[in-house]
Image (cartoon, one colour):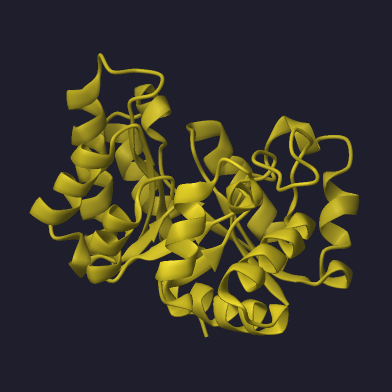
Length: 255
């Protein structure tokens, strides 16, 4: 079975068929899904999904592009959400300089606050980092993220940077990009990293693997990702599924 560690089924792209799609996941070989919060609206929607589906779990945090949603009152409300038994981690949190470089201090401040909240609560973090490799790694080292643990979502940097996170005990999130012709860096990381450090993710509805690139993504497409990882490493697809399932359980501290 496949464990999708990072999805956004609260997205409006699923409004027309969300219930039907999720109801068929087990029959499609997908056993667990983690829905990831990114803004205040999605946090509430994530909690609703976890209440409706036994196999859906939640991660709660504010994406760097959405930190305008955060203030001290809401930060305390986030703490309450994270007390839910199906709340597995704090995320996705981090730095994104692709869209906005003018609010770097604010991004860094809320990244740190949310990461330290995770440490306080004994939960891992889901890191979003785009065009911010140096600052994200600096934060991880100076604030001792090795004491927190987690995953670097949608990893897009070099193997050398991946190795830094692996040395801190982090997992590497691998999704559809590994199937792209221009996914050379991620392919290299998949070949070099221990299989025990890789988790599967869709980031659905985004980043569909080949041959579905450009279309809406969902957890069933992880079979293409599994196939590519198996090909790159020269192992059986079943081994990829089994090991990445175990990895996801360790990441999220589940049985």
